[in-house]
Image (tube, rainbow, N blue to C red):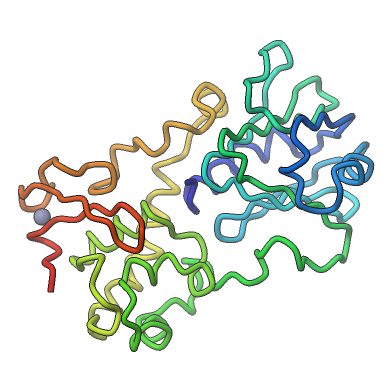
Length: 276
Ligand SMILES: [Zn+2]
């Protein structure tokens, strides 16, 4: 699932390609991906509109329009959003195609079909997408050791699960919670209440540092992004544990292990992140 660094990458690639372009029409192949308003209303309201910029909150992306309206979208498990010249045939799971006035198409592809779009008019409150219930961004000054300890310090839930709680910190998922906890030297399954103040401080420092690092390392050119449709970003060589179970730890040489924590596959080093 795309997490904050991937969504930010997509946003940075698409924004210059979309800004100033107008929507001349929308093809809806699967109305299910439009969560608000109705698919018919979505097409009527967006037709003729011009993109003016973009934004992001956690794993949500915003596409702003010149008249103050906005599109909110969440890619969920397998969603992919990219600009394509019309000559390339649309893949099987292409659910939405925005026709643009420069002749290109903004396509939304999603094999699992969990990705969602919301359209909101200028000034309309977002009571639909869930983006308004997100906790602070990883880069927010409010993310401190004291904040984490206050929110999670008396919980039995696994520290990894805490880091993925979007209502407390927005944008961290399965991949980056593993990476942050590896750097912190903390076993991902440890109950949050056993994490010391010093360890919460360490985690709080690593959250913005790691997220900024991966945003920077994920950066791709528009050509490369179009070629891969954003699918290859998870093979980034900069991931130290996620996707590397069975390989040697880069710090100590031990074999990295995979385990399941709160239903999610997690990779850790048994030496650097000892189980309690
Ligand atoms: Zn190690």
